[in-house]
Each structure stands twice: as C-alpha cells, then as structure tokens.
Length: 452
Length: 90
Image 1 (cartoon, one colour):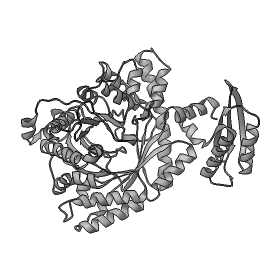
Image 2: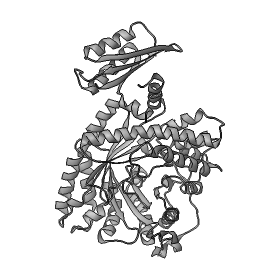
Image 3: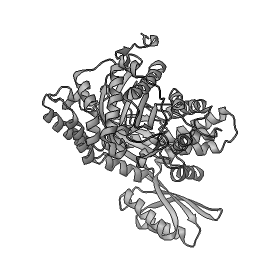
Image 4: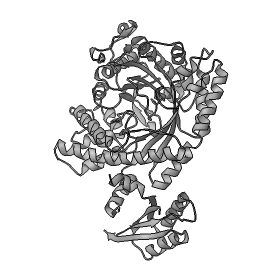
C-alpha cells in the first residue's frame, strides 16, 4: 500500500516542482487520404483528423482529473504532407496547411505537426512544392508546425535543401514580421529526424508507423533540479544516480498516462518520449539543473560535460520505466523556453558556439534561438549545415529552429509569449559562408553509415 | 474496488476531518484508511478511499473536493491510486 511519504512526494512534485505530462500526441497516418484532386485530398484529410482525434482533448482532460496530474498539451501529428500532397495536382500546398489548421482547431488541440518533407537524399516532386509553400503556410495558419529533414547518417546532407531552408527561414520571418518572425518558431530543420516524436514543432507521423498511435512526452526539469538540491557537493556518481531515480519516477507517470490514453481512445500506444522539456516558468529549467551541478552560469566551461551526464542519466532512468521508449528522449535546450538559458544568453554567458557544442550531447539541437534580422540566408544555411553535420557524424538527431527576428539586433529581446517564451537576440559570426552554401549538391554519408 | 487517495494539506483548524468525511459520505465514497499528523503546524492527512460506487463522475467529485478545500482553507486533492502505484512501485 502507498505510504504517506510517497503520496506527498508525488504531490510535491506536481505542485511545487512543475511535474507534468508535457504532451499527448496522436499520430495519424494520412496515406489513405491521397487523391489526385487536391480538393478531395483536403476533404479526406479533414475528415480523418477530426474523426480520429475527436475525443483526444476530452480524454486528456479526463485523465488529468482522474490522476491529478497536469497534461499541458494535446496535439496531433500527421504523415509528412509532401508525401500526401505530392500525388495531387496542386502546385502550392498552402491549402493543405490550412486544412490541417482547420481540422486541428475543430478537435481543440493546440498544435498540429507534419507539414513536412524528408529530403535527406533528394527532392521528390511534392517535397520541392512543400518547401516552397512553407513561408506562406506558416504565415497564414495559426497552429500548423512544419519540419524538413535535410540530412541523415545513412544519406549524408542534402546541401541544396540546406541552402533552400536558409531562404525559407528568412522568408518565413519576413512574412510574419508583425510578430517578430513567429513563423520560424513553428519550423524545424532536422538531421536524423525521428518518426515518433511527440514534441512540437518537429512532430510528424512517420510512414513506418501504424494508422493511428498515441505518443506521450513527459517532462520535469524542475523535479530533477529539486532532487539535485538534496545532494549538493556529492560526486558525479551520486548526481547520475539521483537523476536516474527521478527520471524513472517521471517516466512511470508518463507510461501510466500513455496506457490510459491508449485504452480510453482505443488507439495503440506508441512510445513514451523521456525528454526534459523546459518551460519559461521559473523552476522548470534545464539550465538550472546544469547550474545546480556547480556551474555559475549555463554556458560556461563544463556545461557540455554537465549536459552529457544529464542527457545520459535521463535515458538510463527512464528506459526501464516504460514498455516502449522513443522519440527524442533526452534533454532539450530551447533558449527562449528556458528561464535559465534566457538569463545566461542575456548576460553573454551562453553563446551560439557553446550551444552548438551542447547539441553534440543533448537530445536535439539549436532550438528557439533568436538571431539578428539582418542575418543572411547563407549564414542561416551554414548554421543548419553545421548542425546537420553533428547529427550525421554522431548518429543522433539534430535540429535547427532559429528565428531571424526582422529589425532586431544583438541586445534586443523578442517576446513570443506562452510556452515559447522570451528570446534575447544572439550574435552570429559576421564572416560570410556565401560561397560554401552556393556550391550545392550533397555531402556524402560518413564511412560509418556502411554498417551492413 | 476502485481505490483513490485523498490528500489534505493546510493550516490546522477545527472540523477538517469531519467536513471531508462528510462530503465523501454524501457521495457514497467509502473510507478504507486514514492517517493524519500535524507537521510544523500544518495539518496533513491521507485517506485511502473506495470510489467504486460514487454517485457522481470522478471529475465532478474532484471538483467538489477542491471546492470544499477552498471553503475550509486547506488544499484537498483526490487522485486515482494508480498514479502513486506507478511512480513508487515496480
């Protein structure tokens, strides 16, 4: 039987340490909505999403009440739209994005992901049209998220796509100028993208997935931080053990929510993503965990080592707690969404270069970073190329979600509001990468891709 | 049997147990176990209850309990037992 100490520990985590389930994401395959008529395809897409996800939000809220655990987001991810729309006669896919937006609003979710293309090795017809449609699609919809996979360990890096994405990001920022380039906050450029990621903006429902699945993303930086406060000054073995134990508990809760949601919705359970996803709320920060380990400010020397330990311990603790772990699973380091990162970046402790190093050992990449509005497309492309190279060589997912905020310069601050937080504008190199990016073509896959 | 755990935390005052158990009984919730202490002047109580035959939906019961908490100045939560089992038992 549960004892009082355990009950209060759980309560304390929920009430004071921001323990929550970050998202229940329903993955829906749209492969059976393909039609040569774009109009018809859109109707089918709308019908399928609204039918499958009809009870998602209500079920999430019921589970929240029953277990007394906050479930912050309910979301939908769909098959990469380039695959679905590619079969149609349309030469612009904005109408597909609008259909996603409308369907997502109808079912009440707060984001829908999957306006995506996978072009790590080359462009199919639909991929090119989709990428060209991204800026307008993001500007004219509210809750549609877009992602493009430009590289992988197996395929190398599609440098034509990298070049294009630099331009797409610039254009997205320009079209959403009024909101400081908010469109870019809904766009992720990946290398080694995963097919079952429940987190936005990079979620899409991979083609290897079942027709409909439930994926759950847990969170809990605050819980880990509080646990570490209790082992002040202890050695790293103790630090790792403490994080593992905490991650285990947090993941068990995610597993329970995933199982319940799957049962109640009659949809198979996919994975639990064991990610430490911060929010701008004080006390819900990954940077503060790193600082708790003994760093004066996140971004100083030692940050990469601290993050490596954290990322690994989270996985080790969580993996035993769930029947199926997937997605990105690790620690996220989105700058604008993390109170500690915001503070570190504002005072110059955390630079873009250090963040790049951190992405070698965290679970994703350069995330929610605001850069000056006059940054050139080729510089953005070069940032993407660097990230993709890290992902490709290290067999890991990397991503770039970067916002060249129009009219803003280093020292300014951009307010996105809500979970997306506040971004201090960070410095990029003033030296050009123009000719490097202009080359195009493909960076070949590394030798260790030949594993067969 | 469907077990849930009621936790009550707040400033100690007269009649907390009485009003909590009163509302539980009105809703046909059977109390299986109660443990209660005063920690640093804070009243803390944990009840294990059976909600198999409750009169209203669980969500509604949860609202009723938190409203009662607001009325008598303590924090009351009711949660299905599985959340604690999941977190603390393998």
